[in-house]
Image (cartoon, rainbow, N blue to C red; front, side, top):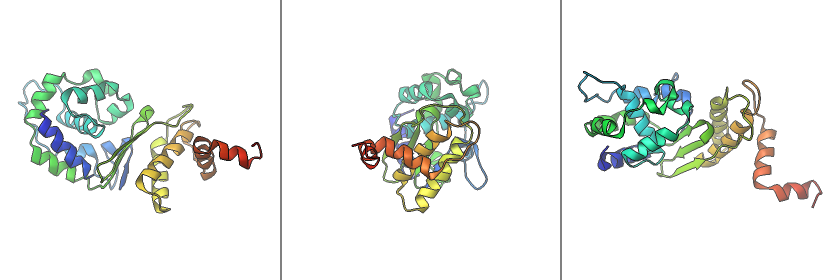
Length: 230
């Protein structure tokens, strides 16, 4: 992928307030999914002998660039280290990074990408900020001011990841409605998700639980003082 195209892609993505969980990569009512948007980008390859779906190559490349990759090597390095759940959401078969093409093959394909079509496709997402949940890798927020914030997972124990994405969406929305900034909302939702995955099944997370974890993380001395232990 030529550096100029990567730079153009990074600039396009910088314009992307919408929390995006893994399900939203593949579509949900009322949301233009990343994969759906990328289907509008024409495949420049000769259909004979094509082994990898075009939307998969684009989706992996776009997500890798969002995570900071700026070269073919960087894209494949990101894909190799990505959580299988993330790759599966990008429709990589089995979430297996070894099913992706080698750098030379990916480079030849992306080198012929219609940059204008890709820009138009990404514009269909119509979002100012992009929040990606990355499984065990936590979350990543790309804001309209072109800042990238990587938020490590707060989960201490993981019993069941069911409902974690919905928990993030609910808490981000609630925090934004209460007046939080996008970054503050993302961090609060991250605490909530860390609590949810520590419970069996699809579970709810209360405000008291989030406050307790937040306090334990940021204000341990203050908590001891209020409890009369200092």
